[in-house]
Image (cartoon, rainbow, N blue to C red; front, side):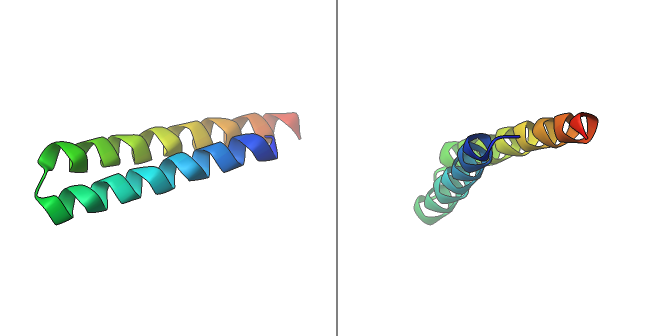
Length: 57
């Protein structure tokens, strides 16, 4: 996996956490859900990249 992909996945996860926290702070359930969705998507991408790395080695 390239460093660029790792950075993008980490950034997406951090953005998701921020969006979730903002949603909690403003009692906006849709923002909380969006934040959790963004975090889950980042984790899925990261897992896919990890699997690719295993097969490359």
